Length: 159
Ligand code: SME
Image (cartoon, rainbow, N blue to C red; front, side):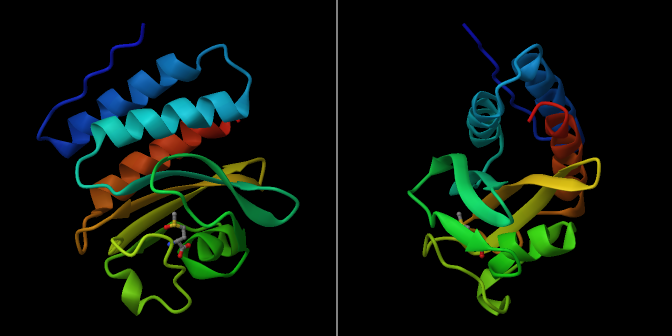
């Protein structure tokens, strides 16, 4: 049984605990879908104020829905479209305080207001993006961005 209960009001500690829990979960497991599924569940359980947490995978130059928690979502996103597509095309983190102001934002869940998308890259190749959505405006801070970049680095070795 896995029993990771991560509760802290300090964001730095939260992400450190999250990273070590994730490291434990993916250790020795080579299957990328299994690792993304556990990562999505762990993030969903640990981070407050999310309405969606999961992955889009790079499948032949197109983003295809991967393991996630939250409501059913758009299945395919071309590179360059929406927040996830922008992260995939630029390989840069997209931290958006209000998605309604983001040109081309794809509204999978009408409840989403802010979004953080982190590319997962190995040897210069995009493997997937980690996508977090929140119903709160400006939910994601620089600390969330730094913490999720660490998680993405860790996952890049396990996908
Ligand atoms: N809003 C995203 C699409 C994915 S969902 O949020 C799960 C976007 O614009 O890329």
